[in-house]
Amino acid sequence: MSKTGIFYSFNSKKTAKAAEKIIEEFGADFKIVPVNAEELTEELFLSFTNLILGVPTWFDGELPNYWDEFVPALEDLDLKGKTIAIYGLGNQVEYPENFGDAVGIMVNLVKERGAKVIGSTDTKGYTYESSKAEVDGKFVGLILDQETQPRLSKERITNWVTDLKTQFK
Image (cartoon, rainbow, N blue to C red; front, side, top):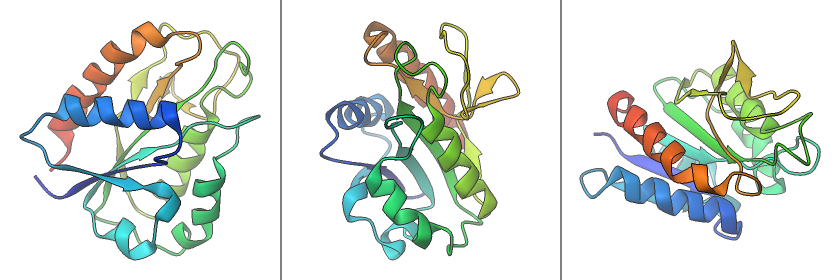
């Protein structure tokens, strides 16, 4: 398998914990390299063929500031040949009108630059009003709600990683 990086803020506790579970779920056969999204450079981003991005939704459907600060650099990158999966955290009870929006925002950014996006998941089991992460009745990545559904995260991560293992080259 090609070099795979998992990009997330090492300072974002819930996103980091989800990253640890994702790495653990991949197992020792897959070499997943953790990368702090707060220290990201274009060269580092492009050095991976397979990328997993941890993108929690902040406030009213926004990207976290560390991803937002990387967007201008990202907009100049050619991501053809890159395979990207995105997971994020959201709160469907307190923010039902923009649940997991940051995942949808990031998916659009990387797709527009030529990346192949994998890892869509079912919306079943969630209750929310709208989400930029939902396309054609599915989430374009993995959405975890550690605030209102923490007990469902392990199974959701297991199922998602099982799917990713078949799609990463």
